[in-house]
Length: 166
Ligand SMILES: [Cu+2]
Image (cartoon, rainbow, N blue to C red; front, side, top):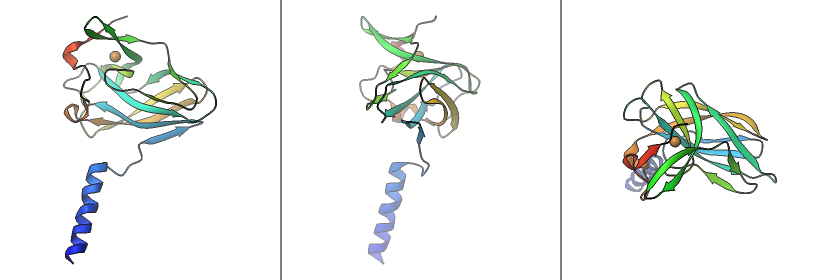
C-alpha cells in the first residue's frame, strides 16, 4: 500500500513537472514546430512568441511571416548587440536550414506581437499562424507562461531592450 502510494505520488509529481498533457508539437511537411510559448504580459502593448522549428527535410525552408488574432500585427524580429544594449530589429525571414533546429527564444529571434488587444495571462492559449516558404501555412497553439519562470539566465531583461521602430 505504501509503495503504491509512493509510486502514485511520483507519477503525479512527474506530471506536474512535465506540464499539461497536451501536445505542444505541430508538424507541417518536413517541419515540426515545438513548444510555442509567449510571456505573460504585464499590461497590454507588445508581446513576443517563441518556439523551435525542427527541419527534418533535405531542403532549407524559411519562416516568412506570422499572424494572430490577439495582436494588431506580428513581426519577425531578432536581437542585435548595439554597444552594451540589445536592440530588436525586424527581419524579412528566419532561415530554417535542412536537418537543423532553429530556436526562437528570449534575447534572440522571436515573433513580435504588436498592439496586443488584451494582456496575455499565464495559462492562456492563443493561435498563431506561421507562413513558411516551402511548407506553407500552419497554425500553432501558443501557451502563455509566467515571465519569472521562463526567463533564462543571461537573457537581457525588458529594461535593457529597446524596440527599434520601422
Ligand atoms: Cu521584437
